[in-house]
Structures are given as structure tokens and as C-alpha cells.
Length: 143
Image (tube, rainbow, N blue to C red; front, side, top):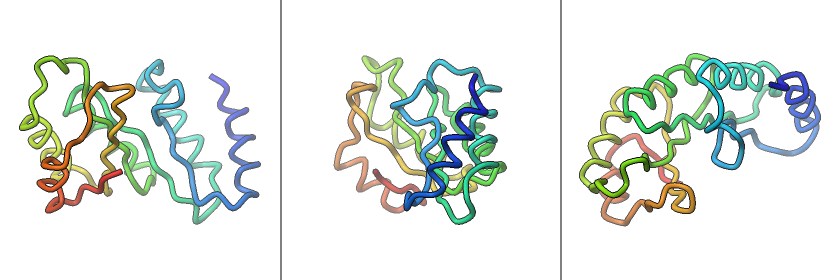
């Protein structure tokens, strides 16, 4: 991995008016990284980001337990928010009530706010209005 190059770029972005950074989002190569590589990227960005920049970590995984662990690691590193896409591997069997249970578990265990990321182009699933209404009473934010 090219962490030094990434740090260089973050240093340059720090000179702009960007409010912060989304790390390990869906438009990068996060799905190709191992857990220790993800931690390395999160650590490198945190170390290099200018004070006051908002840090958002992509922490969604197919497993609820893995999503919770990733979210807790991001929080421990100093990230402000977790960005969580809907699980999609088992989408033919996916039921809306499963989403509510997964989200409730995440809300209970997350030390930082969670942004649910509806990205149907990648997941094949969209967060629907009834789900978002049900989630409004949790500490989950919706994107």
C-alpha cells in the first residue's frame, strides 16, 4: 500500500477548504483491503489530517459483529462518524426487519454517530422510508 503517498495527498488537501475526509468509502478500494490494511489507512489519515477536519470512516461489513468491531476501532482511532452501507451478500434473502435489528445492534454498540449509507448501485438494496422512520429514534443518522 502507498500510505506515504496518501499522507502526502492528505497534507495537500489540508491546505484547502475541505471540511474533512471520508476514509474507506465505496468509491475507493476498501473492499479489497485486509483488516490490518484498513486500520493502516484509518491511522494514516487520522495522523495526517489537520486539526478540526471531520473524519468519517467507512465501517460497514456483511457481518453485524464485524461492522461493530470496525466502528469501535475507528472511534478508538479518533474518527468522528462511521459510514455504514447496508449488507448485501445475502440480498435475495434480505428482509427489511433484519435491517432494523442490525441497525439497532450497531446503534447500541457504537461509541460514535453512524451514518447509514444507501448505495443501491453497489448493494442492490435501498433504505426505504419505513426503515428511515423507524431509525429516527436511534442515534443513527441517515445519508
